[in-house]
Amino acid sequence: MQNRKEYWAGNNCSRVVLTPCDYNGSNPYADGERFTLSSLGSGACMGFRLHSAFDANILTMQSTYANLASINAVVKPVISCGTSKMRLSLDRYAVNAMGFDLSTLYLGGLGGISSSNPHKSNAACHGTRGYGIGAEYRFELGYGADCGNHRTTSVAGKLIFSNSVHGLIGSVSGSIDRTRTFRVDFTCTYNTQTKETTGSVIFIYNFGRKKRDILSPLINDPQISKLEADMTLWGDSQYTATYSSAQVLSVPSTIYTEVALKPSLPAKYSMQMVRCWATPSNNAYEPKYYNLLDNGCSLTSQSNSQSGIKVILNGESDKARIGFSTVSFKGGDSEMIFIRCLVNLCDRTKNSNCAKSCLDKANPTDGSVLHGDVYMKVLTAGPIVVRDICGGTSKGGCDHYCSVSIDKKPVCTCHEGFELGADKKSCSLKSKSSGQSYTVPWYYYVPAIIGGLFIIAVIVIYIRGKTEKGTYKLREDPEEEDGNERFLT
Image (cartoon, rainbow, N blue to C red):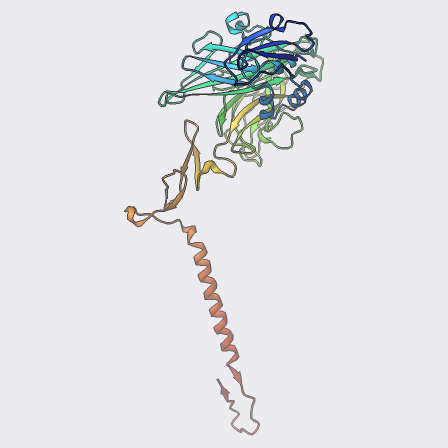
């Protein structure tokens, strides 16, 4: 635990000094870290107060990996977006409690966390100490800084700048992986029309795995017994830019997944993605899911499946790739989803059809890429942060139909015969004064037609009942000799 005492002094608490909790010296202002602040209010300053990162609570929340609000509440990431630079501030005590400090954190760009990241050795890409709402680590850089900044202009009227704070500690010994990673993805978006700048930030913290994702062989092959499997998320179909969870994807948006081995796969083997599915948590036994692939084929015709699946490369080389549309499990608010895939190696010296195509979509097991080969492993990638603007019960606030615009906003439309209100959300019947001709959908007449048929049926039944009661036959008169019968109606 990296707890600290805070000593406050000066007019209106204009200075703060940090010391270790066990400090018992006589001059903390000389021995501790000093910060000069703007006025925090009138009145006498407090003598000192204790700050604690509550290490046990952090461990509990991070092990579940899922509660975005709780994680951010602990680390307190704050993004400030200016006209020429952006600054990310992190709660120093919480970061220290996770085992990280300024020597292990740096601005590393949107790629994966790696000990060989070139920005790690650049002093300009490391943070500084500061004090805002508390003791902070600050990472400040200009939009054109050479610390992995990523600039996007794909959305009309907007300039988007993104980067990530990386952290990597621990070591690997054989198959035991004691590394831990720390990552904060942040984005500043500048609107060229309104001249406003907004920011977003997402914190991701991974505990070290006990074992690395190594494909366990079912046969003895020293060539691949120590290969490490890796599944990566990409934001484009050319596989040139990895997906950053600082980017919130609208539903649906296309994202791409690649499975590869490190080092590269021996030539006789091909990588196969056998089954893939999306889940709302990182739980290996999560009961909620969307199917993406089964037996190497998309499941667009199957139940509990998601459309928009593209099998790009499967069973053809040392990599396997698919593209898929993002999904939402709750709709409305931002949420995190994870992708899990069962992968397999196909030995081309034993199988001539490792990349057999999926021709029969109604029966994905026919022509599948799964041939019962020798290595199987389930890999996980994520989180992917998504928002289904038109999902949930609100439907984006639309009365009838909701769709998503290119700048990720809900667009409302109405049924035929209705017009959109001034609020661009409500729908009402078109008025005759508008001078527009319209046809009310046929299904709006169904209740009236059913009601009319019911009334007619009741009248017919009533008349038939009255007729049957008013017709009867007189008994035969034995005294009549002509044998005729008489009826009275």
